[in-house]
Amino acid sequence: MSRKRKSKQKSNPKTGASLLSCLNLNAAGVDIGATEIYVAVPGDRDPQPVRCFPTFTEDLHAAAAWLKACHIETVAMESTGVYWIPLFQILEARGFKVFLVNAHHVKNVPGRKSDVSDCQWLQYLHSVGLLRGSFRPEQAVCSVRSILRHRDSLVQMGSSHVQHMQKALDQMNLQLHHVISDITGTTGIAILEAILAGERNPHTLAALRDRRIKASADTIAKSLVGDYRREHLFTLRQSLAAFRHYQELIAACDREIAQSLEEFESKLDPPPASPSPSNHGSKAKASEPFFDLQTHLHRIFGVDLTQVPGINVLTAQTLLAEIGPDFSRFPSGPEFASWLGLCSDNRVSGGKVLSVKTRKVKNRAATALRMAALSLHRSQSFLGHFYRRMRAKLGAPKAITATAHKLARILYHMITTRHAYDETICAQNEVQNRQRMEARLRKQAREFGLQLVAL
Image (cartoon, rainbow, N blue to C red; front, side, top):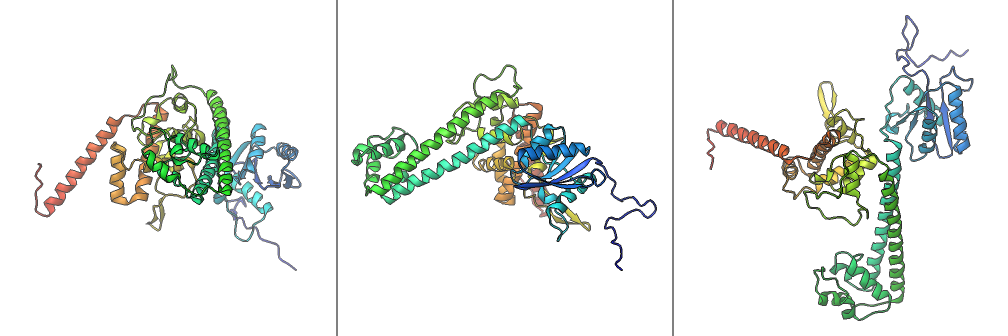
């Protein structure tokens, strides 16, 4: 005769109640899949507390109706690819409080992996308050983010066709792309069009050179002497046509993004008439939108973020797309930096510090700030000096993280207070840092019986 199976959940011997009290009584868990979802509710809400639904739209509405019938108020689900988005939007529209959780934070017990156990495990963790929802901006920001991410994909695909054009030129031994910096510029496109039109005289082609090109006409003419084969010209023609097609798609995305940004509330009164010049003198990139993005960002954030050294319009655009104009979800600058994964993740056990490394996070905003920090390696601003000092002390990778952390806190302060970037405050910090360094050097000199003399 088999014994009764013991419950694996510990309970109080006096009361018999669970040691983990239930905080969310009306909680449900959802395991997301490509073709079906599994939904778990508390055992006393339905004779069949776990149900499977296909991912067709009418079935997702049926799942939401079943959750309403079970008196569910909050739902937890994993962020699995993009499969969670339709159900998330349907549940949110029905009035549910939806928690989108990181899959790495809700791993089940080893050896018990199934869709049914996963949704039940999510429901249990959510009911006892052990889950924390991921940050998700408002719907208007999510709409712009979708288009911007699609635009980034178009830019990447368009750049691959530029590589195809360069490959065709290499196969014909035409060194044009090694002589001019950009074959998709004014000079490069003009010469490519003439080649595809049948022109083979190198001096005639070199005469299409723009006056801003540093290479001489003779150098360009020498680079255009090669073996014009039919198959490579065919490849060049198709690659150029594909590149132009992607440029048209990118321009359509820019028009759609501009219309979406017009709907954002302005935090400036009156709104800026023209973009203010940035103080770090960076050139406009080819991947930047074709409309006045800087003015839109200034109006939406209420402050010009491009005044900060290292921050350009693309970095500010990434912050808007990934976070939105409202940073109030983050109580302070350090917590904002922690969410970005730009601060130490201290791990202590037994009174010993095991690790102080930063967490590995996949965050586009953090990546943009790291790129901004890297661009400061030659800047003569306070932030540039800070980056070089940290690089000499900690090495390049840690210096990039430290500078990105400082940029995050500066931007958080600017956006939440709407105060413009003030270099004098950073200059004061630099003076204090020099005073600390001088005091430390004098102390070390005294220990060696020496005395520092100012020159």
